[in-house]
Length: 377
Ligand SMILES: Cc1ncc(COP(=O)(O)O)c(C=O)c1O
Image (cartoon, rainbow, N blue to C red; front, side):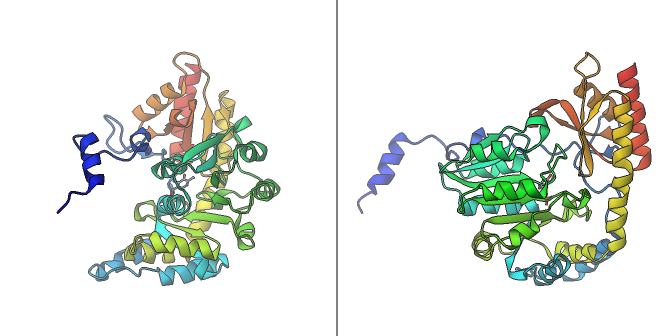
């Protein structure tokens, strides 16, 4: 048999071990929120914007019930969950895609659209998963400045070029908590070429109760190039189970379905998500909690002279003075010693800020007391 010349050429210049494709090792791995603190047995996690009230008791019961069918593959199309989400949000079921958290759905969108040399556009403080997913497809990431910590429609549109395939907006933003008004979202969409997909990531949309907030669903309903993503990880308190979904134009849902792993949401996750959707009481309590304590935290921390950015999510972004002993890193370390884990966001280009999930009353009070000592001490 004649040896394959391509194989011979490769063998000559080959490395001594299989190397990942170009660009992969330049990717900064995703940094999850801290979950432990030295010397503290049970720290309070205010570092990942989970639901501080836990999860719906109905969802827990459904999860336990799913133990009876662990030997059976999950429903690949999540038909019951699909029907429940479609009914709850008044959406066409065939336009929904479910994933192993929104994270997977975002990766799938990148895989469907990006070829090497293409690019995505995201805001300066956009969620790092967009960047990782695009680079994994050997695409470029074009970052639009966010003056005043808010996405600027003008800057986003300026960053779009002939190779842009996807534009990502977090609505409201993580870690900023800021949002685009409905008018701004429509202006962004109107300024995009029709072959560019606008992705509106609404991981925290339920916490945005301002009347000028727009979750993008109506825009998506009538557009061939808008995708809205949502998650069960935040308000529904199911972060451990990993369920996210996207409302897509039908042709995009069809494309994603062709490449996703067939059993990407587990039976237990589907069952718990359906039950969580049906627990109106837990949902309302979760919103009410954030609506009570978000302004309280902003007012108290503002009273200490810290700058608290307006937030429409279940966290606040707090800016620290640079003075020695009073930096964001000092604040993070002191809070960790008190058993309160918050998120340093230097990796988002915000080294002087901390992102703090709204906690229970006792957490919020302990946090304010600790930071008062830091700032006044
Ligand atoms: C803006 C944003 N999008 C998506 C996600 C991922 O959510 P999921 O848990 O559904 O993967 C997060 C989680 O922190 C997030 O903050």
